[in-house]
Image (cartoon, rainbow, N blue to C red):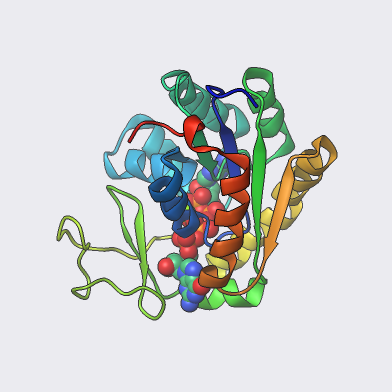
Length: 223
Ligand code: G5P
Ligand code: MG
């Protein structure tokens, strides 16, 4: 790896596996730009853009939005950060999305968070989100300093419309049928690194050590 090489990573894992939580730690420690497809979609819904209005019912029902829509959206954002190292969270989620990404960029590493479904179901019903930033809290695991309010802005936290038990079950189903094949896709390319566990605080040191090996200081974005 040359000194100035840009580092491009993907973080995968079932809904609620801790992608957002681990991404925040990676961005803080390694300075990669974080792009979350879910955060971008929710920002569109919140701002009532045409795209947001079209995608809302899909997301609320726990279904994936169409491949061409999300691929276009994410690839457009990535073109605006050609000079940056980045971490993609929530994209790609189908083999077709992975192929679209592959046509434009080579992914250096894929971090896969392997967390049992039972653990996930308990977490999501106690998640609170600050929609504008994507910051996530949990009433047990990492509660906000003031209940119901974001630590940084003091703005109100909300529960996501797709965090109801029935919708979580549908999201896990679509993960199994549509997203698990993407793991195989990256495994065959030799870039998949899986981290298993039930607690983010136990998984994180392994992810951090792995990235320290992969990503010498010189490759990080200037903060
Ligand atoms: P998203 O937004 O990408 P998901 O379903 O992939 O949504 P989600 O729900 O955002 O993933 P996460 O980021 O993996 O989960 O997890 P998180 O938010 O960090 O952690 C979950 C909760 O657990 C939080 O409350 C956190 O504090 C807590 N937690 C973390 N670690 C621990 C721990 O160790 N212990 C405990 N007790 N708690 C913990 O996508 C949403 C929708 O957008 C559409 C789809 O409709 C999708 O369903 N979409 C796409 N559609 C098509 N293609 C794409 N590429 C799409 N991307 C998004
Ligand atoms: Mg997330």
